[in-house]
Length: 82
Image (cartoon, rainbow, N blue to C red):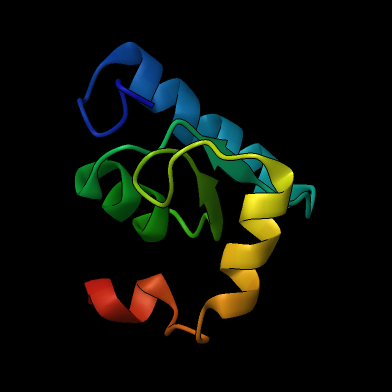
């Protein structure tokens, strides 16, 4: 994810991978999302799911379940960025 939105060769490969997956109607989960810039890139390219430090620290399964049960539903990230 470090190379996205950098106009580098790897960034263009990521865009092609996203388009191929979308054309094949495959679900995508972006791993390594650590910055708001990376999240914005994913939103602009219609990638709906992402994971890593921007959202939460690594945690044991039981802690994750407990945290998710305690959360209130949040608005879609795409709505917050526009």
